[in-house]
Image 1: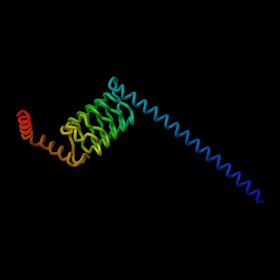
Image 2 (image 1 turned 120 degrees about the vertical axis):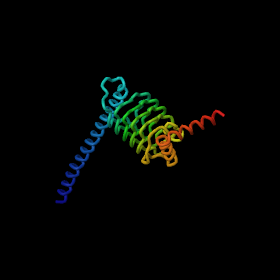
Image 3 (image 1 turned 60 degrees about the horizontal axis):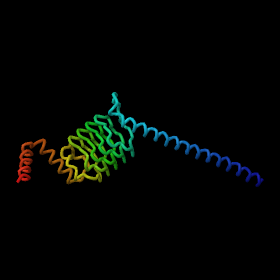
Image 4 (image 1 turned 30 degrees about the horizontal axis):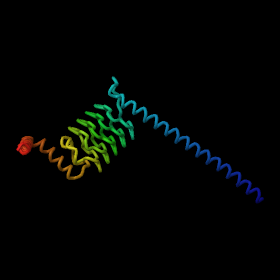
Length: 204
């Protein structure tokens, strides 16, 4: 009787072991397929972005993923890139002039010399990104995150951007930008006088 019990237990353990092995192989195969699909999608997205400016038909790039890709020098001026992801991407010299980039991620991206003029960057995320030489002239930065971004204090183009109290910048920098924005909007003559005084001091 005891031998029979051990026999049944061994049989059940064998079945359980086979099931677990099958499930593990199934999971590993699923992961392999998923990795291949992500790689193919990444290559497709990269190819689309690189050829976007040359294409006659400008397709929407909303939600596209470009994580870790090298898009240096790419021209995506005017592109619809809402909620796209450029995290860890290299974008040296890229052009996003007048592009729709709200809720887009640039976390830890390299943005040297990137053109964001007139772009809508509402609620975009530049956390830990290098923005020192990026151009934000007339860009909408309402609610945009610059948490621990590099080059914030070196970037003079931020003065000509549009920010609000929800823009996440160091408090003293945000205060400076809001005061300058208020000066431009409500006291243009005072700003002109200030610029003239600065030019006179530099000339003397």
